Length: 225
Image 1: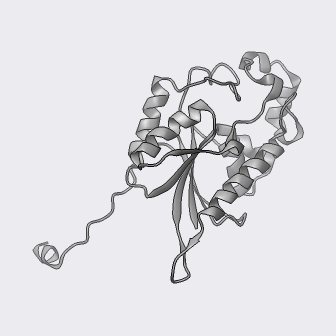
Image 2 (image 1 turned 135 degrees about the vertical axis):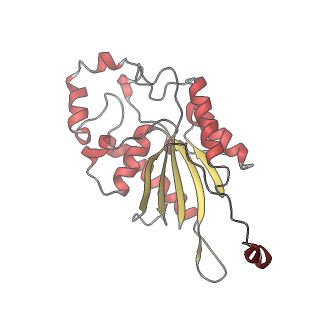
Image 3 (image 1 turned 180 degrees about the vertical axis):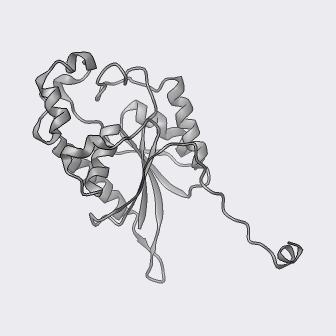
């Protein structure tokens, strides 16, 4: 099995005001950088094999502290890029809120195409196909025939993570916005790439610590206890 850590990027100064989309040059703000470092600290003891990221700056900047902590390099995955919102990209949420299509998005996201952009179904298909490919890639059998469980980190965007989780939970696409995915949160999925994964946790915030490996208790120590 492969354990996928699905991570949303940290905060930036644009995300609360505008639909950022694929706008280039959007970096983490101070809080976002702190979130990325806190996340890396929380996963210090996690046996991470590889770190993958959307090619957008805010995702890469979230992935970098985690990769450094494990002496890895961040590997780009183009199919994990943010949704192509087309003509909506860069517009304020106040502007978008006045559009009939925005209301339709909130009610039935499976039924719309962003003007000049993607549909949510197209996004879900490319993202899940990429994650399944990663899961299969890390399915390395051990000598005794059992699969060696690998842990990989994947840093992307809120809708990207939500759409993947919705598919893995067998949720209707129209319900995917009911899933909460906070900045710098981790959702954990166990997958063998077959399309039948297990969702272990959703939206886990980095105020946790991966347990350090336990030191074997010697016989003498047990006797002293």
